[in-house]
Length: 146
Length: 130
Image (tube, rainbow over all chains, first blue to last red; front, top):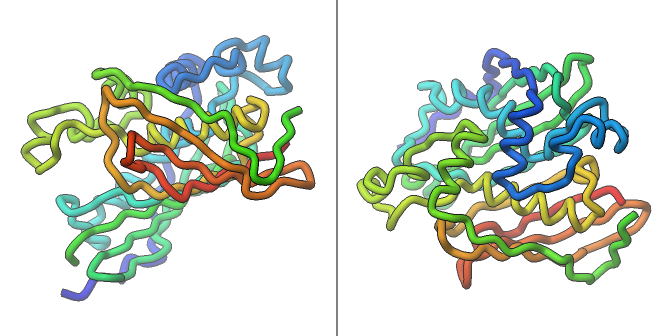
């Protein structure tokens, strides 16, 4: 069965997420991060941040909601029963701090077949309330037996 | 300021996620895929038991790279990983890494996360500012 590729280049509606101080702390504790810049406003400011700063991988919290509709889009047509999250890349720019409002868009970059597997590559781009890029994510899902 | 030299091993980290860690990570991240939190569901889809979130383990890799760069969360510029083996709760995770190149105020670190022989994250590449 040939893989469907018409969704390449498709973009989905942006989502917005307001970063909260306690949500940053919750995430940081689960990962085992102890730096006070993730918990304490004064410590974050003393380190040069506007407010309590998110750990880099907190980006999944605000960028993943934009990806949901892309993953489930019938035009993409991924078989979830045979899908694994194969690879992930993030490139960070401006830090995300408590109080930031972050907007994320998602686009399908590539769909291709290799060694009997389907590769579905999506990009998310997150920008803050000032229009500055915060993080760019590349999400690779692999579907066996396409 | 941290100093990293080519060929140097980073301190890395060792952590054993407890039985309920995937529940806390699900709450923190918003990813409630039942393969991570429901043993019956996980077994029904052919897994041995619940598995760790790949992005949780990527979070540990990010933590190790950030700590190697001196601890400032802003020092991590880029991180790419490949998820391979499945991670299990209640099993020790070792994150280790080696500096591939360093200079001009930045470094690239090759990182691996493993549970015993099972490399759950491989070919991870972290770029940090020093």
